[in-house]
Image 1 (spheres, one colour):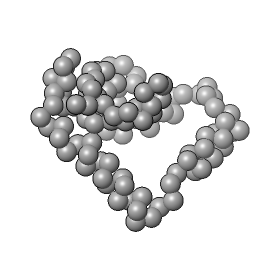
Image 2: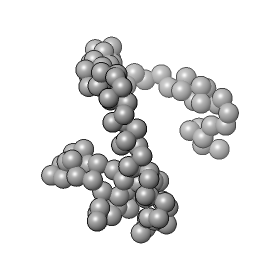
Image 3: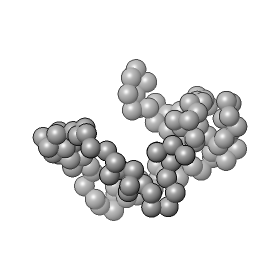
Image 4: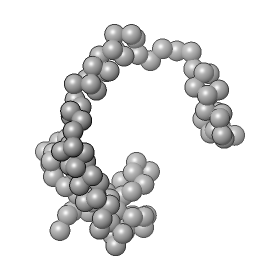
Amino acid sequence: MPDNVTIGGGYVRYIKSFRELVLNDFQVQEALERIETGRLAPSRETHRQHVKQLKARFESSSDRTCPKCGSAMVLRTSKRGASAGNRFWGCSTYPKCRGVQDVT
């Protein structure tokens, strides 16, 4: 079996097998700071918005199937590029399958 395939608690051994540093302390602190400053303040309103977004994403996806692999489609919002902010249907198995459909 490949090293990156784990069963049960084998992931701890796999993680500990790495010795090369990927990020230095400054980069870790910078990433944590970006995460903290990018969060919305927890409130009843942000919770409602979150639940509303989740319901919209999964509500009508049961009748849509991926044109490439046949899996269920999920409503997503583009975060980057020229179409940032636009909604589209993406395959639920992303990144394994990158099937997309326009919202009609």
